[in-house]
Length: 459
Image (cartoon, rainbow, N blue to C red; front, side, top):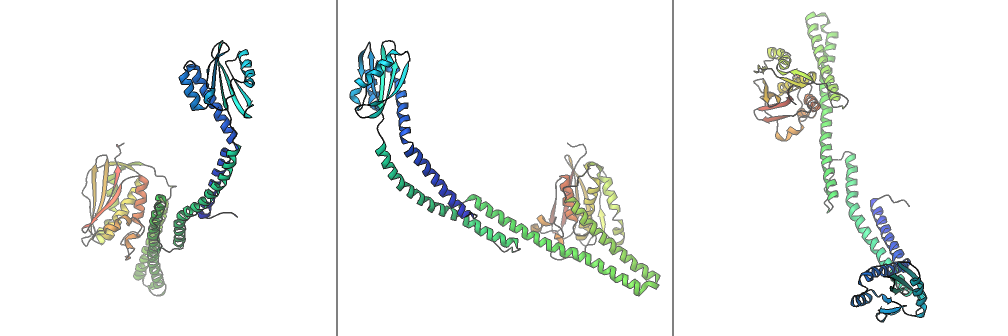
């Protein structure tokens, strides 16, 4: 059966891990115990041999070494035994008829040391014998017995069975509780995420655990839910407001077209007025569609902006000429008192678009005095351009969202005097493409939208 859920997998892998540990213990503690024991004894013999080479004249040191390491030591000089520790150790094979042949064999060859594996005739067990040549007359022989471990291994096997059962049971229990502790919060968050995917924003991910990563995931999902909720609200408002802006001119176009067809087609003056209204409403539709297309382009990573030198004062004057008709017909006042020219770097077409949209926004929301201020300031290596209105300002909690499409009109839609309601979204996209600072400050006396451009000679 294929395990799919997290709880089963954690439990399964933890049990497998416990099984592997037990398998290693079986191999190294039981199957290979004799081999490890022999290797350990051989190493002890080698270590003792190195010590004897430098202390072979110190009987007290040799006796202590023999007793602590359970090693038999015998030193001969000119065929006479000058030191023997056989009295300290049971099972020594030194100084008996069976070992003398190896002593003689070693003394006759020219090697500095030699190790032999022999059988102790007394105890019938394997013994390690090592001969060491100090000089042509002095020889050291070290031996140690390898005690049979069969009985010990048998006991260990019986003990291992009980230990293995206990470890496996504990592994199953611990694995179950760990898997439950880890998977339960994830299962709850998964269920909530599925509800969220279906558009239910009333779900909660506030699941407190003592696992930091789990809490971080809970906070991230909660943040995602809140952002999706805002996005869904903006989407609904966008559809509603775009629908409103499309429906109104289309209704008027149809109404006045029918009027020209049925009523005013013979009256030149009335027909001209009705056709002009149709043209104006068609232009409004064109502007709305163009703004949506422009926003789509700006938010696409495909568009690359070419930077050029821009004369700011000249550009602002050129933009303000477009609003002279509003000054004459609607009484709007565009106040710009700068006379100094600055050269900055940017894409002039897009920066003009930013100015148009910010001025349009100010026109729509300025106060009864119908004043819009255009301000130009020099700050170190940058030029700050600000557009100020005299309206009622923006609530502090709304400021982070004003750059979203139609956010201004999300609660109470009003027909904009100019623009389409997505101007600030275009502004945001353009300025982010320029990688410059921008923002807004607002109070009950009005709002100031600003952005910075780098001066042409700045680095």
